[in-house]
Image (cartoon, rainbow, N blue to C red; front, side, top):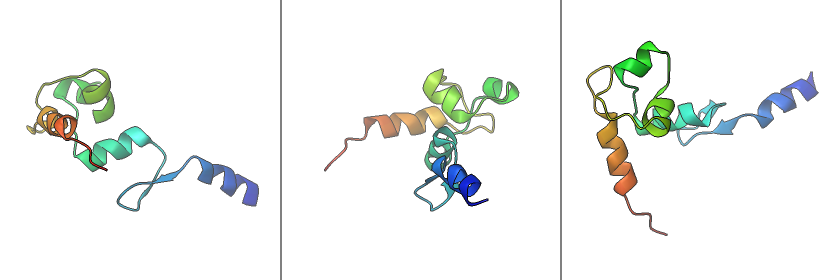
Length: 80
């Protein structure tokens, strides 16, 4: 039982909201507030696949604008 629990913990990571997650793509989309476009939503694709892999710029399925959110993130300069 202990070994199985330890193996399951290796696949988890802690998000910035202190939530344990198994998928980095889903955690990033939740953190950034991204939503997939209507076409990707109907094909059961997530926001990470739609916005970052396919680079869709259409409006979100619920009327939001995730492409604009990504532009803001992309244009932000990192400071150390």
